[in-house]
Length: 74
Image (cartoon, rainbow, N blue to C red; front, side, top):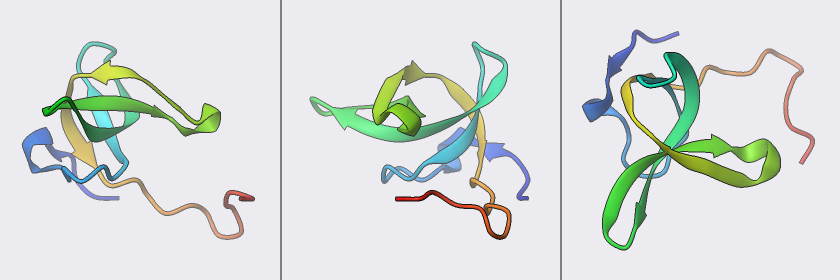
């Protein structure tokens, strides 16, 4: 797994990342989004096909590969 990096270096294209959320003090899957020309970080709740609001991450790492033989049954 990669080392944690400052959030300013994270992808800005909507890619899901594992982020350290400063208010919750825990890692969370997040992505950068834009609404009405305002960019923000949002929590990703893909299990329910929805976003769960704005977050305030300080650091990030790429989401690691899934274990072999595991994956979504889409």
